Length: 271
Image (cartoon, rainbow, N blue to C red; front, top):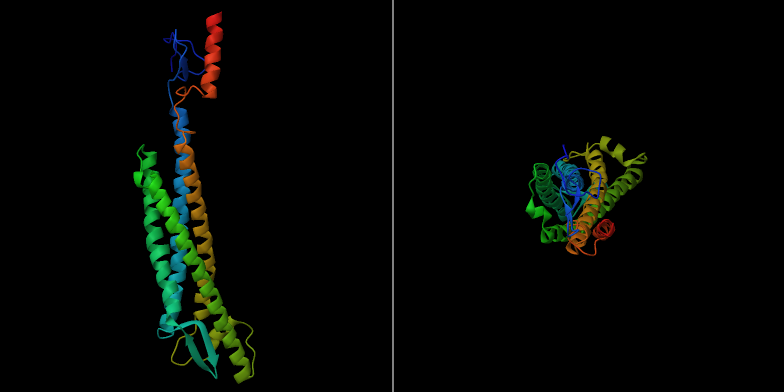
């Protein structure tokens, strides 16, 4: 870019950056393109990070709800979590345990997180095109998402505990029953899949629940990360509300950059 036509004194050596107006010594910002690009990059990374975490939550939700639902279907609609095995008879646990885990993750981890993943992806696309997704960037919207995510995270923690403890109790009952009533010892709970099951299909319960258990804790971790990102956005918005980052260059008399420019201008005027 040709700067030869400029007759105003420049503070910086770059063309089109900081200009000192003759006579009054005021500092003006000619171009914000570099700072604006840097700001957009930071915003893109924030939105993209939240979108990726929401997508991982959706995947985890599917890996929890589908195996639990499939296993309940294989056991004729009964829930094996917290079930006992007595004299080769299965005393199934409360159906509400499986219902709670399945529907919780369908509603929160699949539907709710899926919608937010789409919203944040659209926000990234609009931001790259110079637009703005106001619903996500609004202060009260982020506060709403933060409160909802904290509540959902608590429910996911409860769900992870229910799955882990319930599955462990079921496996313990199988191992004890096999030793007490059949005289042999199962090496692991997975070996119970090879037992002769009557009226139910127990050939895949261990694989399904092992996957659901691991996905439950991974889902909890993902929700915690998402809450952390929401808190960072909240802090940034509070920071902006106090005018620490959105104040135009040279608009505040207390700005260090403005004061340094004023000192330079005063020096030039003396000479």
